[in-house]
Length: 402
Image (cartoon, rainbow, N blue to C red; front, side, top):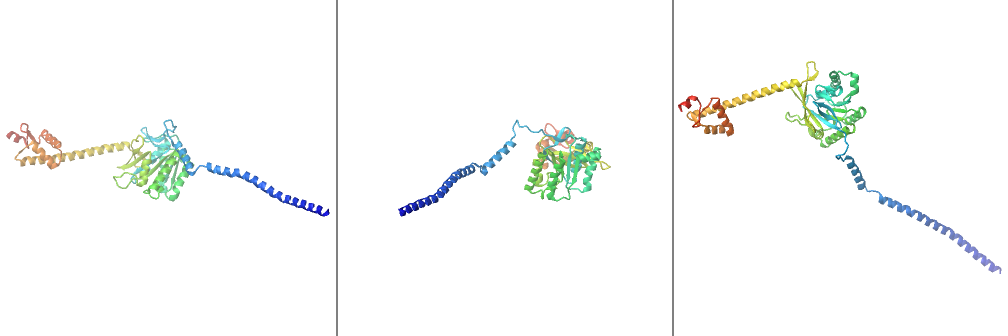
């Protein structure tokens, strides 16, 4: 009896131990299953999110479409009307939000012409150049002249306008950048524009902003940067550049000049003749600015030279006409001398047609020209003609004898 009881107790203890050992395993398996069930949706969500992310090509397409939408210009697109900084005889030039060029041979008056433009902006009008802006600010960056010559820009403008120097200081900032490093020039320009917020920016010596004016990539980038600046700050950027050295070549130098000419709204050209500087418009997207002229008087002051230039032009035209008349008279004398010699060689007379042919052959002229010459000489009585036979003589007596 006692043995049976012990056996039953041992069997119950073993069953209890097995049950106790199985319970943690079942609990662990249950918890793992729950975790797996919880983790499975998260992984699926990550995969789904990754699948829904746009590709790099799709993002680029969206960006391009946004830029195209911003740059689309239609008939109902609202744009700011063109605003000119200056005008001559009612024709505007140097529009805001655009770049412009001023070109000339060396020492042909670029800086002098720009002084007139700056003086007109500050005072309202200088000679025939008028300001189209109200109390504008002008930023002048000079990369070529020494500091004493750069200072003359301000002092000359004060003398031309008669304005108080303190007022000029508020409206005009002039910087001498000749000794600045190449790499600093463009950052200095941008900082000066941002701080001063001018309506007109003059860069006298834009060639210093590039390592080589024949580097196409650098020139293209600089001109693009100037366009961006003019748009961003609503100002007119006027870039000054020399023309090629050959006298007959009036194009601005290198790739920089070509790119500036292509992109500029206006290109002005300065030419000095007989001490008179004439400013004309060589290129313009709209109406061309009428030419105007200036010169320096005995005291070294810039003054209006339109009347002086007009007188010089009239005198030059008269001299040119006189030279043409003298050349034509000499030409007629040569032809008449040849006609007389030819007539003498033919025994004192020649048919009109034969004389005409010989004139054409000798002087290499058209038949109509030879015919007009013979007719003019007959009317002037330096040649004579028997009308019935159409024979030409050198003298009236020969016609009578004939």
